Image 1 (cartoon, rainbow, N blue to C red):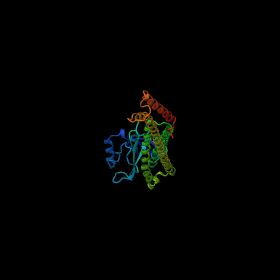
Image 2: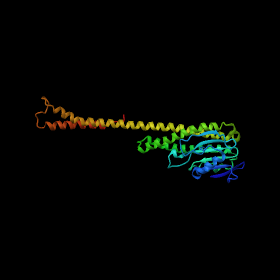
Image 3: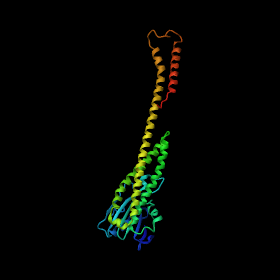
Image 4: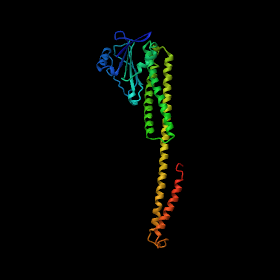
Length: 314
């Protein structure tokens, strides 16, 4: 639990007595502490209950019957950088409570959102609205950074799709599609909430920064366009993989049919000359069996050479 002081000069670390921005980190705050904060300000018990779950729903709403003046709550989704965890584990909710004289931010245990926010903007964050706007802007920076890495994976998959793709490439394609689906749905959900936030007159009046509001919308559209493009690219690569596998399977079936044809030739010769009827050449010859076998082998070799030189890719 960390206290900051937000003033016209920016943000600086503070204490409980002088701080007006409280940052709660899931792994550093107990349930008893959260319950105490809720009781102190008459906040809903489930306000800070959002867990590190990708399916968490974003929202923007006003609160009633609290001890705070003009309280509103905003829940956004952020994506932290990790190479070892799944997309479900990396997507995390950020709960923001804003009142006239207090700002509370609740982040999950792995979140780097606050650190990234304060790295270059500490002196520029001179009111609560600007902090909230910068938090939203930073979440889109994280999504765009992830999508840029996904583009590199898509380029690798595209090159692999032009060759003989193996199991590793197919698994990577599935994993990448999974990440894009989660990001796509998260951005769609968050877009509705931010559209509501950025059209709220009270919030815009407090923000008093049209450029920042515009920058958020630009980042929003940028991320959404990247998702749409990459989703279509992955779909085309997936279709190419399927087409190549179908083609390989068809070629294999043609080859197996050819093998079956070659094997059937000796059986055909043996079946014809094995009939108990007269008139077949060589029936009374001592070398009739050898002649039949040699003829069968010769015809099989001729068919084998022909089929071997046949182009099965057509």
